[in-house]
Image 1 (tube, rainbow, N blue to C red):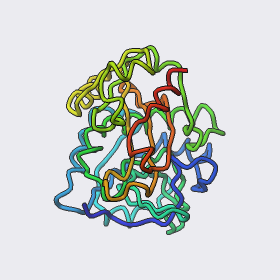
Image 2: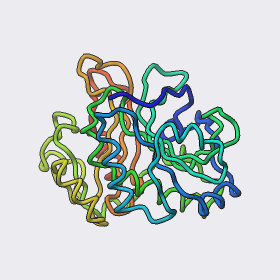
Image 3: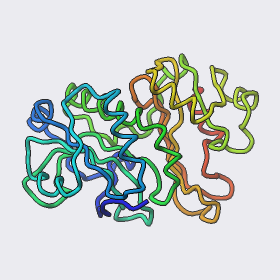
Image 4: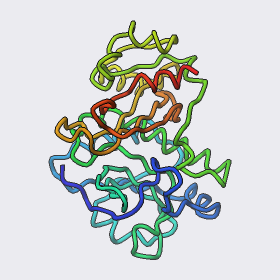
Length: 278
């Protein structure tokens, strides 16, 4: 899938302690609530991203008015400090080889430098060469996350996106955890094997079931959002990032990462089950 641009900036959402993208200030957050959010279309004519994001915004987005614009419009409007934007982009962290797909959720800025645009709640979707079918079905939850997070940031001005790494929320135990069989380590691909380590409600689900739970705002369901190399030829290279997200409001209930190698595949691990069971 062709992306709009490659941005040589630090990944904000997932790399705790190293992110330096400028978070929105209180003044900028106030501007956000009075803004129109402009959803920037991907320029790839074969991309399904535009449809999925537009549908998710129409169903779940309530915090500001929104309008879909072209990438050319974004270049013209990006210096408007009273506008907010969502843009599909490739992001490369300076000290890592991997490139990731993000929805960048930012305020406009007078500078032409993308890195200076105040960040509201950007979301990582996948490695840049991943199959987009592995994340498009979760688009409703990503929209909910952005809306929920920017609201929480308004309540707690010192909050930073990096703080959602290493989350382990006890609320998860009261929900049913839905997992995809192909995103689990081989030894935990059944409910029975999972419950040896995690004795709480769990279900081996399908992508279609997760998409429906998100669409129906199921507050009793949480699901895994995994970001990893996927390609078996790259085992031993890169990281696997794991987020458990509420289908109801998109909040993050668990987050962790590990280096991918022969002993630790690109998957949700037994160690993750043990952590969320604590």
